Image 1 (cartoon, one colour):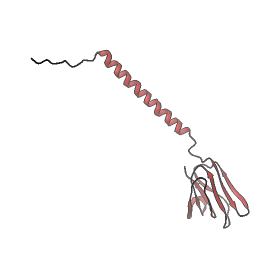
Image 2 (cartoon, helix red, strand yellow):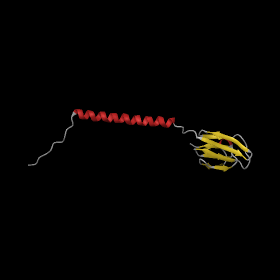
Image 3 (tube, rainbow, N blue to C red):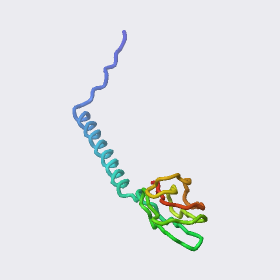
Length: 125
């Protein structure tokens, strides 16, 4: 004679508890995601920390302090031998023309510098 085991049955209380746990877990996940979104929105990711120094052979000519991401016109004509120094925590791109037009010199990572006659500088975020 063969014996068969009956499948365990869940009580109604156990079923209610598991659905309550699922709801609580969903609320917790949504709370964590909402907190992360607020943290990302409040982070200063749209501005570089530090400064960009444009120095002509005659001395400092332009300094951008904590520049926002985007294009910055230097509003001057700089002679050959002008140095652009990236002292920020973001990469910048130097252009010959104003409003980030013209031939880009090159991307300067944080802490790097180049000799170039800039017309504008783009701060990447």
